[in-house]
Image 1 (spheres, one colour):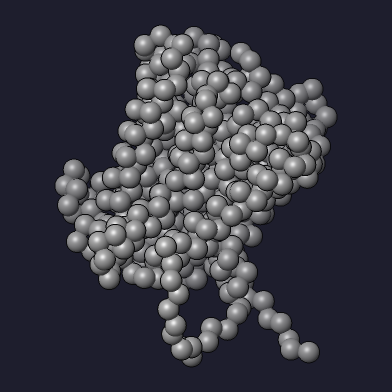
Image 2: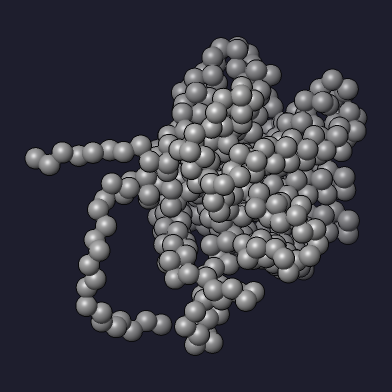
Length: 442
């Protein structure tokens, strides 16, 4: 029999690193000290929560505020932070802090982890990312502090403002508002302009990607000098916020006063970008509003950002390819640059994989739980896109359905191509080419 060799590639290291954090978090959440009253969570609840936190999703089976102790909440926010900046980034920054030398192999892993263009200057870029994360999260916490000061007092307000700032910036969607109503997310602040604007800003800044941060830092507002990726990310980010905002404002939340209606429309247009918070009861949306949110969840944030799930750059590349086909152009182009056919092929593969998995999982859960298909598709799109928005069915799902959501969350955060490359890294690539024959499409 031929001998099977299994190499520890960079993509496998990234996948295993996320799995290691999830398992560690699961063990910690099962400790008696992690819940209140003391006793610890079951393996199923702890594993689901650890996966959701590490994969910065936000789907929960236990109310974060009322079920978990202060220790349990600390474990959750640590997993969110590590999952948001990336397990590899966090590990390398720890090595830098301890003054350990970073090898070329480690730099390569870092490059794949944060979607950097090359290995050169990767440690410097990682330091910039970490400094930016700390700056934005502390700024967000400082702005939110006065709000929570009125809600929970001076000491708890520090923890609450930091927790929500980190959760928003990492696009995680975990909240501590269960003291007002269990599983309520941020509906308590539906009309609060400060909370809405701050959380929206943190979501968008965390979701545009570290590469775009670098372009903004280097070139300021000179959009022409940005890289192609940054241009596509910013352009489509504006589009996928503005259009849903107008649609939600026109057709949803009609029973709310003017200020709350505007804020709700804007917040619900932004939060599907893998964030997971909501300020309005999503069960009050029409079927069209729910379908629109599913579509938004499957656009995602930028590559190399705190966001997981399908990336907006994937959508951008395919839109450019479609535009080239409509114009009968041979090359896929954007902003005076040509996009390689390999990139287009990868984007199509990733999109197909995500859509097939989210649809198949939704159908399976609908049959298992005897629930409406649209409701189940909302949950599966939320899981695979690592969004965390829910129509309230997740806590009541069976262990089989929860297992499906766990698998979707893990794949969504680690990345579809990462898992594919992990699985097929040892396959030999043939250098030969077969005869060509046309297939009619369209």
